[in-house]
Length: 584
Ligand SMILES: *Cc1c(COP(=O)(O)O)cnc(C)c1O
Image (cartoon, rainbow, N blue to C red; front, side):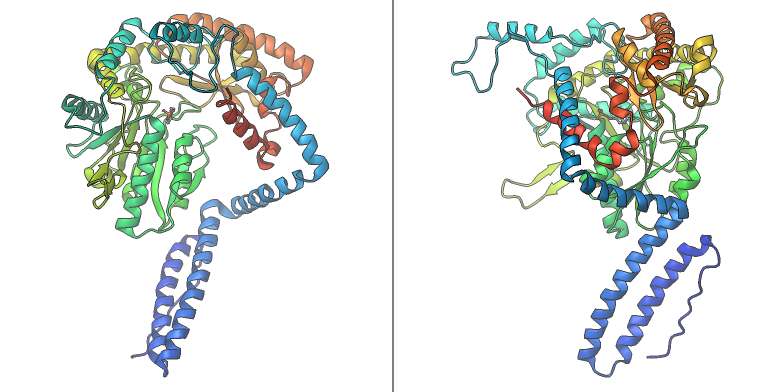
């Protein structure tokens, strides 16, 4: 065994750390080999070899984790991260001290009672079922019960006053979709031999959506039950691609803080570490420099939104694509919300000659895109598309079992059996509306959004107190209170007042803000929206002066945000909310 020169130089600057780590890994391999081959006693030599390998592996992986964290988040960022993880470990322990615990339990119970009152609606003339009825009810009775259930007090979506939720709402389309459901209610995509027509329609739906996102010839995808399933699948495919092709065992995902919670869910379900990157404080697009710093040899996926849910802002996908190409890492673009708005922005010419950013498969780094057909595609709920640049990546989302006792099994998405009728409803919608229809919808919805934006920026009252977040190009607009006016207007107070007038804005946090996703139903009531926004702002200013900026139901939920989060109290409220959904 010839002597081997071991050369390791300490990094001179922070930029050299990844390189140094890389050489260190090789040095360690060399060291171990030399030690093994130069040992006299091969038995003891092997023992030492195994022991040393364990120790070195442990130290190396810890060192890698610490250094990449400091490298990615900076020294302050890392200390902050450490502080937060320690406090989220300690605070629940403090809060479980007996006298604090009972106080919190009382507060929590109050909140839960409020939530239940809000959510659980019932009425004396409804039949109650805690178990199956002994004798089945006749179809007539069931139908009349359904009508009564529909009349329980609820937010009215028909009048366009709800952000998102119902995107089209036209009677003709609803009729067509019900017809499609009627005809295909027994269909299941698990059985393409029994339902060949459904298979054909599903393949066509995917092809039509690939086309509007400018996929190359190799483009492919599948239909899913919704945006979240699309995001779960893209996460799974990226993890498996990383593991099987690159040998990555500790997968990491990098996404903006504004990415949809579905990506967090994917990381939670599939055991991946999620790095959430701040957005630029001016543009509200993901900070590209920070994304770059977080990339390391464990990165399996980069993400961006077109646009994101909170602020309706399209990330700088062109720059993300460059990083994806440079480091050879898959890049997912979440166009779940953008769907048939973002893909028709260019051809609808709603922004005139303004040069629009690219976000789709025309960018070489984009490897997957999710698009919710059940949002601005106007399909019935339970429908989304996950697209890939090539089948190479798609195959990693498949589940394959060739030796299952039940037969050779394969399933393309999360579910086994799938409700074919929903997919047929989607197909019927897409071919019924067509490119012209979507272009026209895009034009009218985005024009209305831009009009609302202009009003917030120009109206004397609105422009004095409120500020639009970033430069939204699509159908979603978010705004917050100007930092100089925080004491004079509580955004959550404004939200409560708007609710009283029947307007359902979505509430956001960090920063506290409201957003509205305009739909076809909102376009005709835009003037009312603007008038109510102005009058509610005036009223909210008055109320804020009277009560301070931390009152009101919504403010109470978010008010003392920081502390309720670290203490895990916010989590308990959400669990209580979810439990409420299943109370009879
Ligand atoms: C709606 C949405 C999703 C997916 O949500 P689902 O409720 O599962 O359809 C994903 N990303 C964004 C940006 C969204 O707005």
